Each structure stands twice: as structure tokens, then as C-alpha cells.
Length: 432
Image (cartoon, rainbow, N blue to C red):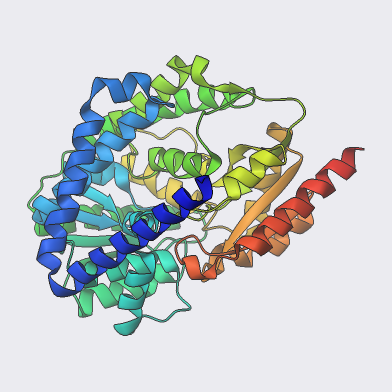
């Protein structure tokens, strides 16, 4: 009986997806209203104190509330919205009181709703190559479909992938959206830091011109101070994570913590998240000695999979995620542009593979991990290209899983299960 219910639920979900696709095709404006209404309902739920107090992981409520608020602002007030890619200078944008939205978030949401294939096809029809990062392709499909309004501007650093160079050109020429590209040097000498900090100052002028928002040095300095305070809490919480696990699946942890060090950088939102994470330490789950401890590299698929369940069934516990590692030192509020320039240059997706390998090894040692799993998304040349160097440097077993975080057609459930099972067996044999 349970199987029939699951099948029926799956059929109903497929029908809902097909209906939404038809609405998007026939009337993007109507689809925009429906989606905005859904976001509004979620936002109202997130405002409820009950969500905050009784949720599995209360700190998540802080992020969910702010994220839905930003999605609503992007739909209602696009003239104050700026799209920025994953490692953009969010501290500056957040301090200017514009509405920064992470560009790749639209791909993540589309995958979660089961609509990623629709938007990937939309992008392909419009000339976007399939070999490019699926986060970029799906997000382009979303904006090309017309269900979200065009933002005031698009800002992206040149890191971490080639999509950050291709997409801005398309956005500017085809969609007519003002674009600002930040060229991040590979080295950290005085000349390179000055070069990048000068670009960040020019970006401020660009934002003022395209959105009408005004820059305040004192507000940016306060944002930097807030980020430093947040990092202090983060380091304290990181110690807790050596003993306890957040009470949410690894796939949820990856995206949750990533928002705190990117989209909400320099805001009270991130600070409150870690403050609550420590406050609700009793809701965390103590690490079980019989479980094998893993470090996860990159993300997991954002559409439903059985990866979380497989890990749990084979006593594999993800104790930390490479993507959520803070790599920068304390920022100087008196020299905010220079500090942010150094932070961007030091991003290990901007450095040689050997630097990434060094950091992963450091994390493995810190958390006394038994193994490392890397999810290798199709089209992500930057991360996949470094894996051989990382694997050779590790002293613990390594598994490279092929697939895609957004494109469900690239995911092979049977092969993924088999490889995870074999990896779990190899870890077990290694200690026996």
C-alpha cells in the first residue's frame, strides 16, 4: 500500500510540474504571479515564531526568512535588485541596501521544484552550450522564460569557472542588462591587491548608477566588523561540529551553511545564524563512534536523490563540507576594499589545485575523517580539473562521484548507490 501511495504522489507531482511548464509557456506573467504567491506563503510561514522554535534546526529559520524576503523583492522591485554569482562581494552590496540575489539560487530552486530540465532546455534553445555549468544554464533559462523580471544589474567575479566569463556577455548583449565583471588576479602581491580593490571601488559607482543606491563607507566598515564577529562565532561552532552533527541531512547542510559565508556575508543574518546554532547545540546529534567520518567536496544534487539515505544506511557521516570552509583571515574595517580584494584572491577556487589539496588535507586532519567524497558535476571544469591533484595528496580513501547538481538527466541512481556501497565497504575493510 505504501508503494502505491508513493507512486501516486510521484504521478501527482509530475502532473503539477507539467501544468506549471504549460503555464510558463503560455503566460510567463501568470507564472510569475503564481510563483511569487508561493514564495510569499513560504515567507509568511518563516515569520512564524513556531517555525523558529520548533523546527528541526531553528537557525535555518533565520536564513529561510531572509531568502524568501529577497526573492519577493526581486519579483516586486527589480530596479533595486542585483544578481551576483556565488563568490561576489556581497559585503559591499549588503551594506548598500540594494537587494543582492545569488544568481545560481534560481537554478537550485528550479531543481528542487523539478523544473530544471525545462529551464535547461530553454537556455539550450537560446544558444547556450550544454557543456557549460548547469547552474548558469538553468538560471539563464529562468530569466529567459520571463517568470522573473530583469534585475537592475548583473555583477560577477571571474572566479570560479568559465561560465562567469560567458554568461555576462550573453546577459548584456541578449537581455540588455548592465554588467560589471570583476577580474580577480591569481596572485596576491601589492599590485594585484590594488588592481582588484580599484575594481571594487569602480563597482560601487556602477551600482550607484544602475540602482540609485548610495554608498556609505561607514556602513561598509560596519558590515566588515559584523563579518569578523560572525567568523568568530563560526570558528566556535566549527569546534562543536567535531562532536555533534546538525539535525538536517548533509544535502541540506551544504546549501544552508554556504549561504552564511556568501549571500549573507556581512549581515546580522549570518551572525544570528551562528549565534542560534550555538544556542541550540542541544538539538545537534552527537557523533556515533561506529560511523565513518567523511568530508564532502563540492555540492550534492539539488533535486531529490537517495544519497542522504544511502550514507545513513551504511553508517557514513558527513562531518564537514569543503564548500563551507572559511579561508580568509580577519578583515580590516579601516581598509575594507583591500581586505575584500585579498579575500577574493585567496579563494581556493582561484588558486592552484595544490592549494585546494592542502586545504582539504587540513580539513581531513582537523576532523579526523576516514574518507573524502567529491561530487563531480558535469560542466564544472574548475572543480573537476583539480581532483586528480587532491586525490593523490590524500592519505585517506577518496571517491569521485560523477553526476550533476542541477540536471537530473545526468544522475544515475543505480550507479551512485553501487559506488557509495563499494566505498563504504572499502572504509570498513580498511580498519578491520
